[in-house]
Amino acid sequence: MLGTLMRAAAAFLVLALSIAGCSSRDAGPGGVQVVATTTQVGDIARNVAGGRAHVEQILHPGSDPHEYEPRPSDAEALAGAKLVIRSGGDVDDWLGGLIGQAGGDARVVTLIDSVQRDGGDPHWWQDPRNGELAVTAIRDALAKADPGGAAIYRRNAAAYEARLKRLDARIRGCVGRLPPAARKLVTSHDSLGYYARRYGFEIVGAAIPSLSSSAQPSAASTQRLIGRIRRQHVRAIFHESALNPKLEAAIAREAHARVAGALWADSLGPKGSTGATYLGSLAANTNTIVGALSGGRVSCSL
Ligand SMILES: [Zn+2]
Image (cartoon, rainbow, N blue to C red):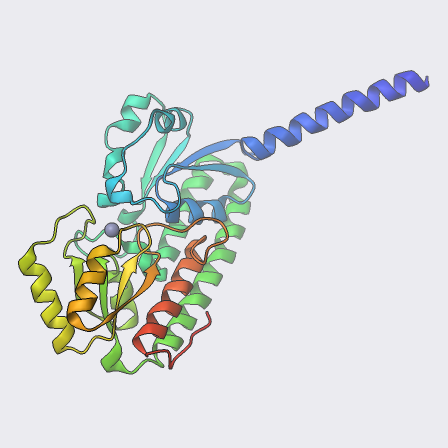
């Protein structure tokens, strides 16, 4: 009798372990496999999915999405996916024919089609109101792929949207303490247009004057930027975490400014960094920008 009970208990334990192993490695009870392209989209999708769906993210923290070359493992992930969530535009153009080649039957959602886009600028996530629109699009796509989880996705999305709204208000409050004449941005490439428009910064220029980090600056464009930084008395310019800051350092030297940063522009940072999450990256960028442009007089502590 005791032996039978122990065998039953052992069998139950094995079963429980295998279920636990399965749910943590693969997907929750909805069983939906999701592939997200960029680090920001991956983080937003994980917040909406919670433990219900498994989100596989193609880009690693710290990698430049404009320059990414897909690997065979990306095709494997795509082949098994029910839903693919793209950021859209130049940051995941490389996905191109990969989905078709992978041979899966995933539905593809391109978030830039659901946000307030500005021409060909793909960096929409730098405005948290666009983050909210992306959350809604992801919530609806997940609910369609996994109707049984709709209530969970709705709840997760609402909670995350509330956090985005609160952060947006706090960023506005802090930038408001920066003298308007100091609200001037120079970055590695044209990555913060959405952020600048949302919070009232003027874009003075970029070391790589392009919406793509893979463009090459000319000597003439660099000289023009140095002239603008001097004339407008820009105190600090910013480099971006995923890019080499050499050019920014040279520009800052010539323009009598300093290089501050790094900003989390096109990629989130590794675990434990201030840019490990989408919300964290927006807060950390604001702390860095406001601190540097006020010469340390205004501190946000977001
Ligand atoms: Zn970019």
